[in-house]
Length: 456
Image (tube, rainbow, N blue to C red; front, side, top):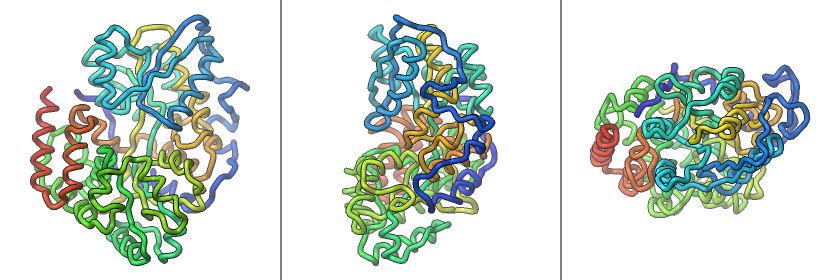
């Protein structure tokens, strides 16, 4: 199972450009002239529209996704606008991870959703292999050609044919921190891994645990590994490991795990120690970093731009109380890992294709973008739509990177290895968090699971 993922050289600019304003400002307006649509603002809620959609009155559609909480609520705003414009009735279907298994059950029961939001290129490839997925139609392809770079189209393609529309992107190389804690401790933003460990010691000496780690969610641990590995081993090795062209017993994997193990092995640096981290889910890992004033449970939490959604559930203000810095360089360059969610049609219907067309448009992207917690790969979307300068600069930097990015490694692999709770990378890295000294055993387990998954 392989996508036609296009990869270029490692690009630090994705984070470096965005870092110019990441540590400053909170909410603020933007200049429409900075947008990619010729300065024309479009709020995606009526006003001048940029995409034509068919009238679908009387048609019913189902859209499946694993989003919950604020993400689900914001996506439903997008679907509501689609309903207004087309007359269709759209139902959101909550899915469980791994979504491929969920979809398999629905399809076996004769009740597939019309569209599914797939969070992994590997899941798109599996849906194509299973003959579930339908290629994008002419209108959706036209929107993709207009609004997306070739790299983002390629991530949603299998064997050269377009199946996925990447609606939501993510910069997964960010560390968010409690500014009050840093100020009280006299800590500063690090640029290298060694500096990160030094600042962690400074924070710890001030009486606050440095890191909040969401070990209960294995996907966050894969992101930790991928950032360390990409920076330390380099993009060529990263691509080879993602395609299983080198084994997980390779010395480069050992080096990355050893580096990460020095952090995971220091229980004083993890909120609740290793046991506490393994019981901490992602939303809690964020909220416990930004509640409690200058005495939270942790000072820093690593994850993507979508952390902003969970910060929004606290009293912290992004850009003032909650700040962010790029994942520090472990090797020569700081890593830039991206992720995303793609819309894939599972029914060959006018309604499914119309929704893909809408999701590929600037109109749809701007509806969620202005809510926050969302970064769009749509290069024509007006960046002034983002609700604050932090997200605006992250989004602008993503577009500025063009096709030079590395997609989340676990998302490129077969889902049984890289995207399933209690299996593969998720389980092996949770076991590693529990016992960070067992580098060799972790490598052997990863290789055994990868070998099985790539053969299936």
